[in-house]
Image (cartoon, rainbow, N blue to C red):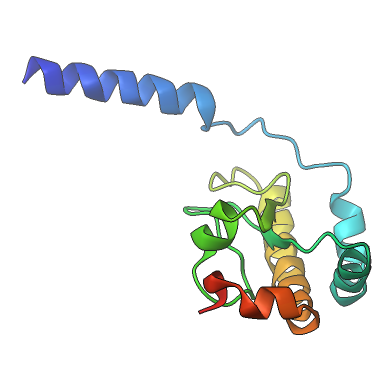
Amino acid sequence: MKVLTFAFIIALAFVSTTSWSCEREIPEQSDLLVQKNPEQEAEAVFHAGKVQFLAVQGYATETPGAPGVSYCWLDAGLATVLDGTTDIICNQTQENFKKAARSFATRFNKHLFELSAQLKKHMCAN
């Protein structure tokens, strides 16, 4: 019982110092996220040869709009986490940013998948 209690305390200390923060800043580019066209951004990324989905952090890290299982794309190095997304929402600004980020990522990922034969053939797409 003492070992289990000790393990829980260590885990709680680790989590509390690494991820639980309401002081997390929304990235400066958050306004740009709303202004940009996700389909145009996907085309620019595709033509630049940087074929990577966008991931959004929450309870789990997801690649909304991408087929298959999110962790597969992440493990394959074919997804980049949008800075500022988190599972801890402390105010309306953070909530609005997360909704905008998810919407942007969904449209971006769907369009990037349509453009890329490489992604369509990848094992993560199944």
